[in-house]
Image (cartoon, rainbow, N blue to C red):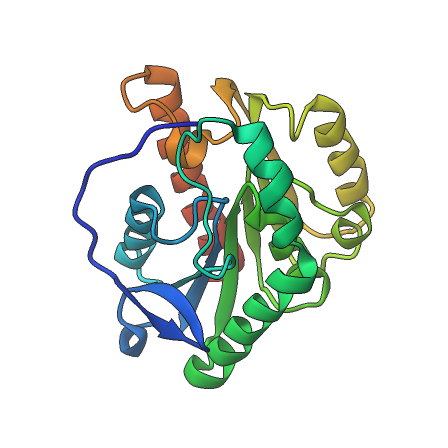
Length: 233
């Protein structure tokens, strides 16, 4: 559930590593790449493309692949519970990891970046943590994460920032507190921020007319930029 934002995008949709991907920025002018792993709406969702463009404006080359083989979830589906019962089983680790592994391999071979960082939204966060546990990423930011595996979180090899919502049935307080306990044991730099009066999805599809949601969305982006500037300068 959420809102679609207006605005012209500046990147392009093309095939990258055999995967439909939104690319933004100029790879010849930077040695830093941001990998965006989206929520279930996928990389063609305008809100996510606008965020990718914002990272490009901050000097990053941005790669945002389609993890769903052109099968995203529509915004505000009529029966979300039924949809997820049929959709999620088709898009598990056995289908998603081969896609993102191909993309990250291509990024490193083609661009040879000094830093490869990742930012995730909802669904994509689990897979960023999986990559981080394998040492693929130099830093990550997770926005209202879902389905993160505790063993992978305990194995991360780089700094991680988690931005959570006060109202979130997928990442409730008990999971947030458990994540904190796990991250303390990793000896990696971490940050967990809780945004009040907002719900799951606030960082990409919150109500643009609601002052609290608008502020939280903007603040979450700014915090991500600062996190990457600190740990992938």
